[in-house]
Image 1: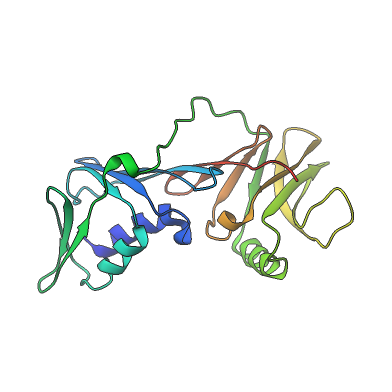
Image 2 (image 1 turned 180 degrees about the vertical axis):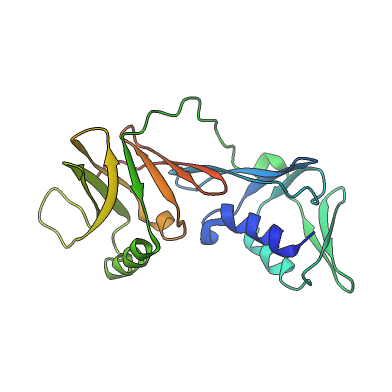
Length: 221
C-alpha cells in the first residue's frame, strides 16, 4: 500500500498528537478507527477505503511511535499481521510494531442520537490562520466561544462574563434562531482541524471532512 495513504489515515485521528491510543479495524472494505480524547471532550470516527492494510483488529497504544517507525520506510510498503505485532516493510527494510492488548485501549461510547443543529459556520483558511494567531496571543485560553445574534456570528477567545482580555473573530454563519450561545468548546482541537463545523446548542459539534467527528463541548466558563 502507499505509505502516504496510511500516514494520512493516522494523521486524521491523531490530530497533531492529541490522540494516541486507538483500535484500528480493517477488512476488505477498508480501515476505520473510533477515538476519544483523554479529557473526554472529543469523540470521533475516521474511515478509509484503502483495503491494503492487514485484516483484523489492532491495538495501537502509542501512535507517535508508529509514525516514527513508518518514517524510515520507502513510499510503497507491505503490511502483515503477526500474533502480537504488525510488520511494515519495503524492498530493503522491515519494522516491527508491537500491538497493545485491546483491553488497554480507551473504550469509545456510541452517540445514540445526534441532535438537530441550530447554527452552521464556514471556517475558511483565512479564519483558521487568524484563529491560530489569536490562540498564540492568548495562549492561556483553553476554550473558544461561539455566539450568534441577529445572524451575525463571532468566535471569541478569552470569553468571560466579566471584562477580560479577549479576541473576537467574525464568522459567516446561518442560525435557525435569532440568538445562539454563548457556548464554549476546547480550543486546542480546532487548531488542527480545517473543516466545516455544524454546531448544536445541546453542547455537541459535528465536524465533517473525509471522516465524521463528534466533539463534546466542555462546560461554559
